Length: 383
Image (cartoon, rainbow, N blue to C red):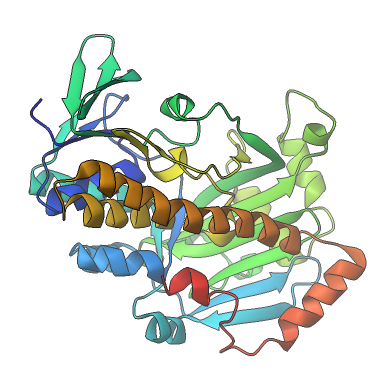
């Protein structure tokens, strides 16, 4: 055993934990099942509750340099395109002491990976961990050809976590929604695209929404189109198909429909989460990131909460020799907060996707909001 902590999974959550714990003075090894470290996907929103953490790790300047600081965060109605409400990003940064950043998932992952290398985290690839054995005062990550022992093993193996089953036998919960994503060089856009390149814009509509924002210093436009699948509701195995995408957005405004041809159509992401659970810790095994609290995307907090996990763990494990007490502290602090985020994300999805009288009431409520009314997000960004 030559590690204090073994992290199973080398995504954003796993690398964030590894970096934070290494900075706290612990010896850390990361086990990644793929042959190389990398991140799948496109855009990512990093809110002030997470950019404060990145700043404390000395990484915020790099994140800002490779991302975009939007001027406004805007909600629009997907049917008529009308602006409903917005947040001024500069005022947001002043209030919460850190900026709101739009960044490519691969860029954030690359920054974390480089920082892990620079600080001496041991990075191992092509290691498929199948289980964890508990021993007195340590745990062992088991794979086909090796045993990695440490004082603590962290399961950062994502939404479909196999190690979570060692603590809980729950299952993924399908939302019935599916996401299509895509990026396009800004140089290829025309006036007919109707895109505002200094804003993060979300068009919300009945059973669907479209997100648009710039990436990589404004060189790329990122889009995500999300809709409820009738095939999923009918119990069909093949659901979320491109024909459903076109049908879901048929009645939206011109600006929304103009973005659909620029989405990737050969791949889509079905949206799942899980019910919150009461504990993420079993002796010297602990869950982090999506393995602990997979959530729907409506609050854009998946990666942010994983970075909060990392910061909390480093504070707990790095300040004591009583690792069992430290893990209990982590468990008590993080399960309560992330449960609220998970449940609120579901509620915001319902708010975005309502129709009829509910849509009219929602639009009236949002339109009446003043730009400096932060009552519904203070609890999230101030933490």
